[in-house]
Image 1 (tube, rainbow, N blue to C red):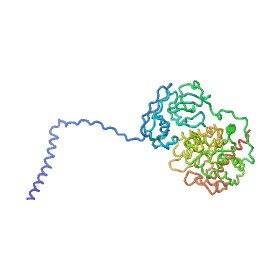
Image 2: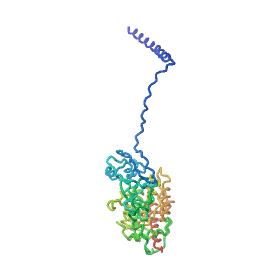
Image 3: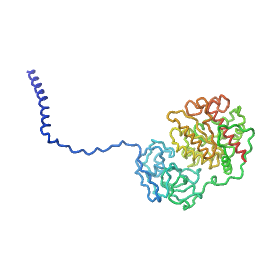
Image 4: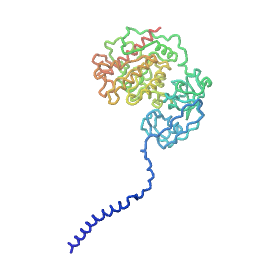
Length: 487
């Protein structure tokens, strides 16, 4: 019985497999002229764009002959992710938020050192007070223009302005080189050369003047005692010209001290292997004994906490790019006034005649050439304005993947600026050529250090830091002797 049931089931399945396909074929081909009913078109699926961490920004308006419209701000999101080139001031302007309220909503935020990928809380930002109609704007090439408390590069920085930020000019200096402006969210002073104006500047009232350092005439003389001994050879110190003398004379009228120098830089400057041994008297000049007078001269006076060689600089810190010495938020609050940049703070305390400046190692990986040049220009201009001779140094090589050619590019900028501003150039890069590993430590970044970085034996001079100390002394000696021997 069970066998008959199985036979019946198999027979039914065979019939179904034969009949059903035939039936379906006849159904499809029975009426070839009658098309199958078409389906109603589905509505288009919404296009899904992957969520972006960045906010798409509307372009700033182009400057018209007269600006009468105010910028319509983009609605503020709860958070904003920083991209390359952002400033906190620009973010505040973009979303019509009060600058200080953003800082308050982000405890620990450094408004001058934003990094790409950093997330900023905007939910606690208050709406900014509407400003007067603009009659100018930051020029297209002026991104990062510093809004200052007063006219002059030594004045405290309030913030930085994006390119094309609308401005209202309300005053100027007598020579129109500085403008008092109202920017979205605040007021201050900016350099006129980075501003496009739709009004004649001579129609603007004079509301301020430059600091004395930029306007006083040089005194008739500022004499240094003649250095004893024969002049040393200075193969790596270039472009010491009469302009150095002019800067020095102005500095003396401002109270700068002729036998004090400042150190400006990063870890290559901060290290106690650089010049500290000379300041402590722990050195041996060997065949360079003609440098003894310059070592004595700059060891005689306390700069702040020690003589210039061993002084702790307020304008040098590990990891600093060039921008950091210009950022008030990077300043030491124990010594620097609110809003005072580290560079200005160091100069105020030390009152130096000369500044040894090496910046850029920490700019090699990520700072664009334009931004680095802008920062170096400001460093040089502040230094000169305060009557201090900037001696700018080229950078040592760097052995890191992905930065090929970058040191050479920044050194080209440093060299060009030295000649443009007619200031001394300390070519440290050239001094390292021919040394083992080009004078680098095994990390490929810092100068190598031997047994004694201030004992100038031929063996020790195979190390990058020993060469740095020797060439620093030679640079100081060259400038000092030039100033003392100038008429």
